[in-house]
Image 1 (spheres, rainbow, N blue to C red):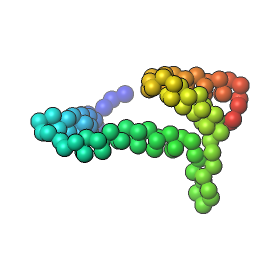
Image 2 (cartoon, helix red, strand yellow):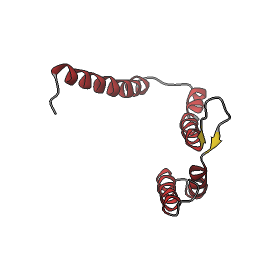
Image 3 (cartoon, rainbow, N blue to C red):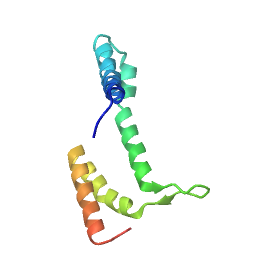
Length: 111
């Protein structure tokens, strides 16, 4: 597959913008002192993002109708949630969730 010079510059430019938009905030924040209330507020950002991602995968949007549950994802979320509560490890949540989904798909449960 041949790539034109324009495509190469677009790919490199998008990569540079992605890296800079993720790295520059850390450079600026490292040099300043943030108030305690802001640091306390920012501790909620990761759980908010994880909740949004989980809710997006647990429900199926039906235009013009109510959202329905994705049964397989809901069933796989149960052991993954238990793993998170018991171990407090994101790695264990991911591993248990993948294993639960593999078992559900192998036995054709919830789908």
